[in-house]
Length: 448
Image 1 (cartoon, rainbow, N blue to C red):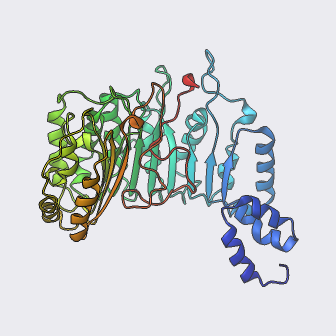
Image 2: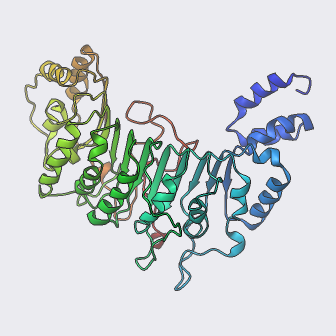
């Protein structure tokens, strides 16, 4: 291989990106190949809490400025620390990521820091909160953990000049945790016009009041959001989504084009609302949605339809209240009736025609059905009629009981980053497929 031109070797190495093991072997062939391949090994760093690895990494980066310039993605993979009485969420000093690391990686564009809670609040956030700091001036994608008391952290985050995609995990931290207080002298609110995508993942422990408060902090500081993802585990029902959307109603009337409201795939049969007590909030949410220009919707049918629905709701898509600008619709439907419905003379052609009239730009419908019965006509007949109208129709049927989770089970997200249809973005901002999908929950430390 040493006889090949540098341009050809660059093409070969580009094909091997993503296979760290192969690139590592390539570096041992010759010094020339090492010079060409080694920077690609440092493009995306995944840091683990290991003393020797941290020391060696810092030593290498300090001695090799050429490698430092190659680092664009940083993923901090610290696990939950052991909880003790007065030393909650602490690591030994030599296991903490040195702040000098952020001084070195000035070309960082992607940062993911979820489980290092002590690190996030004590080291990373103050770095973000320095007005003159240029450590993160190239950062475009940030995924971080955040406690719902720490709404003050949002302001230094949204001040990042190049940030476009923000992904927030609301973490469970003891109730006596003190909120983060900024030391900035200028308390003027800052409005970001560059952030285009916002994802919020709520834990089951949050109830509507803090959800509304935190959502308000996001909505006020980010005015140009085009894609909004809200992930919520079972427990609070559709009301939590309604509180979030109420805070983002101005965005619905403005630039918002993609909306995802996601439960985990496995739900508890007692986890969703059993009455229509949230009908008022639902009507407000639907009014805001109908007046919007949203083009992509991915959600659970129970959020928009009455809780006690039947299979008829799953096929009467023409009766659902969505904006006329809709282009891609991805719905999850869980059949709650134990007895199979008697066949009805459904006019699928009329349904398809009505859908086309109501949604003239509609291109694709994906229906995730969790039922005890197989409805072949729903898949074939309706699919044929929609296909004749130029609408792609995908149906995924699964047994009803597969949708029921045992207590304490987090399950797998139904809206994975690996989905290829329009219903998902089709790309994972941090590279590679993440553990349980973007909607999957993370097990709290006391359940481990």
